[in-house]
Image (cartoon, rainbow, N blue to C red; front, side, top):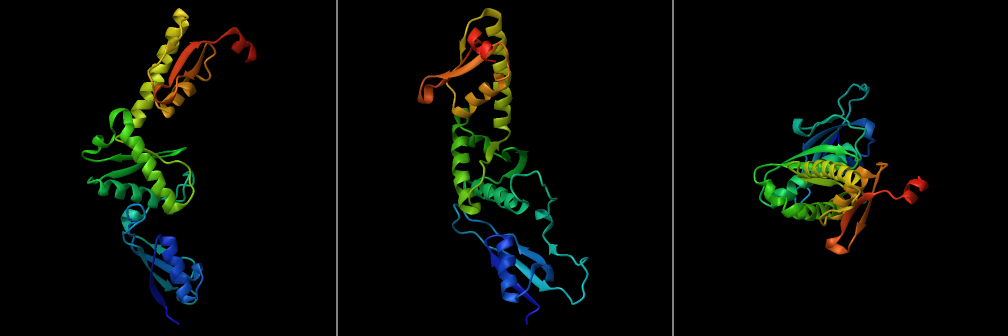
Length: 240
């Protein structure tokens, strides 16, 4: 029986499984060396598969024998609080890098949040992909999540940010909501905000959800839907 075999697969896990089947061995009976991490290809098309070298452990080898030897750049500590397994997280960040590579930009992808998973893209010229009021960025996030679903299967929404734009926008909206709530408290008059996309309206609603003095609701339709901040009515306060 062969003592080692090279195998390929869409992911490291797939490649290892293919090698185990060829060797007729169990996972704890072998050591694994990742030869190439591979790339997923844009929209799951093209790209290189992951390649691993799987070797049978010497008879009597202790559990001390190294199980996985991977390139330094792909080594990462376990992160049990992440919404994806580490292997899936590596695939997700690599897919986003590849997405921007096909758009002509070399980028760095950083995990900046976990509930939901947030990936921030940085690199020269990436600000051009934000678009007016983040419209291009929202389209990129939509396409990326479609691609990720094709690669990983069902998953929670992954939020894509570029140069911290979303983070800055959320902080701006949160601060604005609180300042406008103060104005409503002072003069008693409702304030209607400019039209906003759904996720930005949600930030306003959540920011003021626990406020005892003001209430929020949305009005209008389609792209003209807006948030209204007003004093809570006596009925609202009674219901609380």
